[in-house]
Length: 247
Image 1 (cartoon, rainbow, N blue to C red):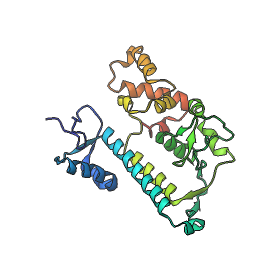
Image 2 (image 1 turned 45 degrees about the horizontal axis):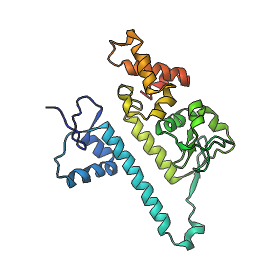
Image 3 (image 1 turned 90 degrees about the vertical axis):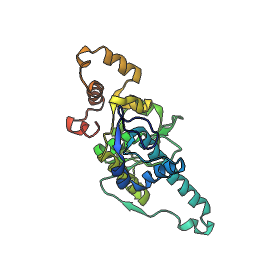
Image 4 (image 1 turned 180 degrees about the horizontal axis):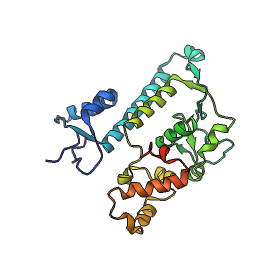
């Protein structure tokens, strides 16, 4: 009998999955969201959680954190405002982008389009350039397409000051990616289209067409990963050792 996901109850036979007990032990606060849901639905727990469900739960957890922070700001006594600036720390060797959603993180950019920077891209910048983008940081569509992340650390608007919340965000991100493959191209439908294009330079349809045109890859079990690794290397110039951290 196929193992079922603890959250969605779908079979985990043909999808990435995690052992539920280890997830619960390592990420208790995130796991608690799933536990509350299955209790409310009066469902029996299972041994696994599928990757899509776990990623949705992580996003829910982040939304709850942001909501709690916003509520705390609203409830704060106005008299406390002058002293409410979060304590910041200087971290030599680590830089961050401006913590604002009002403009693109690339200096002097006036493009009106703005979007969140995908976590996989932030992870890559932290590992390769020692550069972090805070929660409020935004990037325009044009700079996502250009893939010029290496220019960010030398900009004049970079800062060495980090709040405790930003440091914990970096730590949590690194903890998640230490235990997971960062990019699962075997099931690339789970990768956001914009993020997919950022890494490979192709749309998902173009990727599929290219894959179908390469008969030498058809018999390989991990043919999508093989092709994606080549495309990412060509686009980023990363070494094989560094690319191993993302696959």
